Length: 292
Image (cartoon, rainbow, N blue to C red; front, side, top):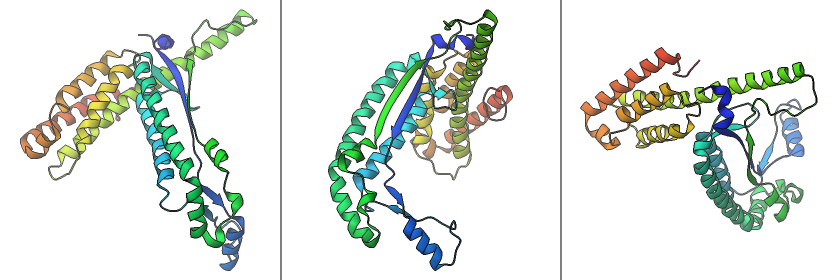
């Protein structure tokens, strides 16, 4: 498949997650500390954490935001530095179903935080004592507005989409620029896919090659997830990537982690297969296993 035709196989997605840091820079305390220690005015900054240490509802909400962002990266491919990610159409239904679930979970967690916020604020006043300032805290409705979760979609630019009143040579120059960028971004996306596969194999090789190394079930589970995701993320239908994906799935993920722990012979054999796969990927695609 020509990478420049990727617009027919994928779309762009931009995830927005906004949170409240629950921290506030205190100029007066910073000035006092620097003065007390005869330090320069820019020697340090004092930032207050505005909620009590056991602010569980807040911690839950922040942790959920982080996990949503991480999973978003797992379900999409690199595209640009501006925030857009590539979402193959083969993964669209799975992604949108997942995102609706995350929206529901995020709203529930936010509702719980907002409900607990007045109590947290009262507890923070006890903890901070002389450092407490009413003006540091947004109101209940305002603090809710500090949190947001949204996603935007956009088509991948395609040649021939321009309907502008320009000279033909100017339009050609614009289209060539779009073509170059899309081609480069398509290469970046498939490199991202290769990187994921390579890193999962490298982790297996590292942990299983040392007979004394302890590993969790997630070592194999994560590799299985990568192999499954790449069925949908191979947006350019790269046959070499699909062949390697199947090879990794067949050779490295077939055994239960408990078998690998309890059977040194099997563990050693899988480690050797992982090393061989890494060697092949390096030969084909460079030192990190990704297409150059």
